[in-house]
Length: 118
Image 1 (tube, rainbow, N blue to C red):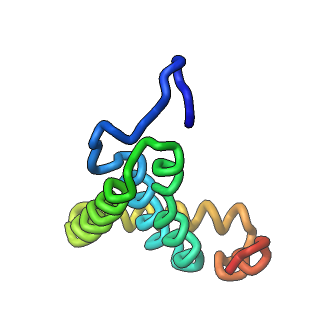
Image 2: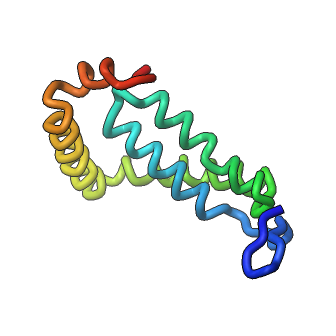
């Protein structure tokens, strides 16, 4: 049981969906699209994102599962919007450029040098 302000947190507020889970899953899915070299690891991390919310007693499992579904639907909607996709592509290119600059090699090569890079 986690305490804050001397009050125990409980999963009794019926908060569907979990906004923390929604944000984490959305972000991981978008990053996975931006960095396909890390796609699997990012998608797995996003899929597990809500687990802590359940363990802390802040959400029920169904609330977290619902958030994952909403996030996946939102990402599909975003990526099918032409104006949004243009901004996404520009952001992806900037991110990839910054990462390659930091690694000083192509991302595929950089990935191989990072511990657990699979």
